[in-house]
Each structure stands twice: as C-alpha cells, then as structure tokens.
Image (cartoon, rainbow, N blue to C red; front, side, top):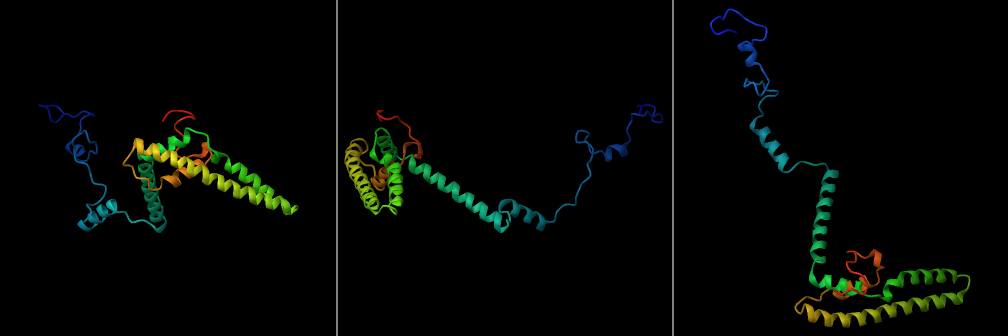
Length: 191
C-alpha cells in the first residue's frame, strides 16, 4: 500500500484484518487463544498437582521405594566415608587373611558332608572341619582386632569403635573381589 495512493494495492500487502488474526509471534499481532482461561479452582488444582501429584497406588509405591533407596544410598555413603571405616578397610585389604579362603573350604566341606550319606565317617570329619574353620575365623578376628585397636588409638584416638569389630570380621571373610566398597589399596601397601 502506498503512502499517498491508498487505492492501489499489491499482492504482498497485508490488510489490518490479516495483522489482527496473525499467529506469528514476531509479527506483533494478537494471537488467538487455544483454550478458555481456567477458573481459579482449576488453576489451584493444577498447581496442587504440580507440587504434589496424585498418583496411582502402583506409582506411589514405586516412588516411595525410590525415595527409600536414595535415602539408604546416602546413609551408606555417609557411613562408609567415616575415617575409622576407611582405616578398617585399608587395614584388612593390605594383608592376606585366612578368612578370604573360607568360602571355598566351606563348600568343599559341605560337599563332603553330603557325600557322607554314603559313608557316615565322612560326615563326622566334615562337621569337625566346619567347627575348626569357625574357631580359626574367631581366633584370626581376635588377633586382627587387637592389632587394629592399637592402630586406631594411634591414628584416630577419639573415633567411635561401635560396629567396627563386626565390620572388620565381615570384610575379612569376604573374598577380595566381592568386597564392597571395592578395595582401594593393594596387598602389602602402606595405608
């Protein structure tokens, strides 16, 4: 549309009606609404659903399970990062222990125990072997605990000892590749 000739039109010119119904955001025209404005009640309900969504029973259980799992992971990490726990892990991981080899020996004695149904004398020997293994584990744990207590008093004098003996024993009888958290040092290394 020309400035001084309003009666002349070109094909590219737009009318004021075209501009009013334009949905282009860059055109500056008014865009039509796709839905009516929600009522106050509907807006409040939508806000509540965003903050605390209504879930089905299955979704709620899955969400609670995930929250518990996350909380347990955080507590586990917090517990495992305690300096006395790190010292126990390094103390055990830096040495060879009899407890690491307990599981294969126990499996062998169980096999002998089962084979004892054919030869009753084997059952007695398998039973004695199991008791001997338990006694050796207890003796080794007592020996390692006495050494570790001195080390703990030297390095971390005010550290709590609660639960450390059982933690040390369970780590001792777990094969090295299955220990969690994984071993951080090699055997014979300084810690």
